[in-house]
Image (cartoon, rainbow, N blue to C red; front, side, top):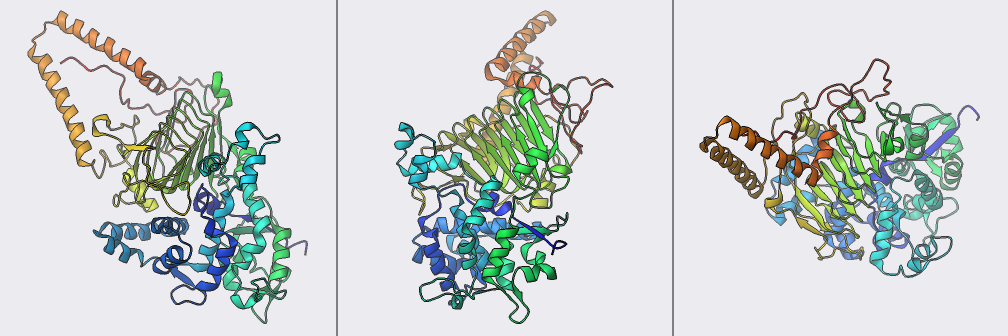
Length: 592
């Protein structure tokens, strides 16, 4: 008994990627999910796999959800599922060939999901549910502000700023509190009484246990090997503890529930453990001002797939660049970064920007989701499976995404523009995470309404960037690879705007050349141009970005616990590799 003890914990990704950071529809309550669990077992095409056609029938006809919201949850669940990059690229190609709504619906009907896991996924959406009572007494002493927090939009804004997607303690508490209802969704209808309650001798099948592996994983006797819950219980001593019967090949639900309550613990690879005992990363000249507050932790050296984390907190007034295999398929959180320029040019699993301001963040392809929450004046450049924005203001996002950008309540003055940069290994990284060039829905946002049963039509929180304001972004580092331009080009109107500016520069150079200035005049004119250029740098804040690209000179006595990088890792205040940058700007136009 002592030799075989189990530690079981909630998996991170179903909460981090699967749970939308918003108030769930009211019809996702246990009352309706219990009815759905019985319904799907008695209808053709619903069990053990649930297709889009039948889910749409249930969601729109039974739960009264809007069709676009029904597809949002179905698509989000599929994004969470482990599929190969080749499978995702094939699916993207099939969608890109759909030219009419009928063709698109026909293609969607080819998609199906595990029914029991989808039920658990829908139940998980309650993680960010907040009651009116909770919103009112969340503070020790209610304030006038909290007492007036009555409108649904204000409650949704509160959720977006306090969502629990990264909170591993909240994940554990949620599972412990709702374990009985989660297990109830997995049992067969014959295990329920006429009133819908579990019978005392209810059993849990091995197939239902396998579905529970969506949420739970663990290890035996503090082993370093991590197993999904159904494989963990393949160890014979643990099977008996969990109530397995060799005669029925199922588990006693009551004994299994008691086993889990005893075995459940905090995720040893979660954000709490990572920030306390993860590998801390430092860099040269971390000595002055706000740099003392900066923290970068990772657990990628020891965490299993799906639990690889990197936390970057309070990175301020510096440029940080990274291209490393140690970031591959990691879940990244940027927290309270300000006035920083951050380049993470590796294929990533998911990214969250939380309470960042006045930053530029350029990301490698993100296989699942990017969530921008409670940010201000942030520019994000990304290729991602899904883009979600909540409670943010005056942010600009240049994206390539096969799904509609999800705009949650609380956003103000967002600008959406096309993806507008490249780096040499971009296409290889996109292929490795299963992201294709088409379809691209960057300019078709879905507004998740204050009424969670559907979307809203108020588009005042965002705008599409006019071509007149569009400028391509140059990544200011030398890297190895084949891509030397944006692989798929720019939308026609934006390409014309770029060509128009290039033509203006050519005309200006031609005018200067035809002026036939002598050497003295040329020198004077060059000095004037440089003066105006540097004034523009100061006025626009571009000077800070350029200055941060100059790395410090390291002496033999300098100690740097740096990130091992494959190509690029440069910063003014921190040097992560000693390769010089290729400046994007900083020199005034030359007078020809």
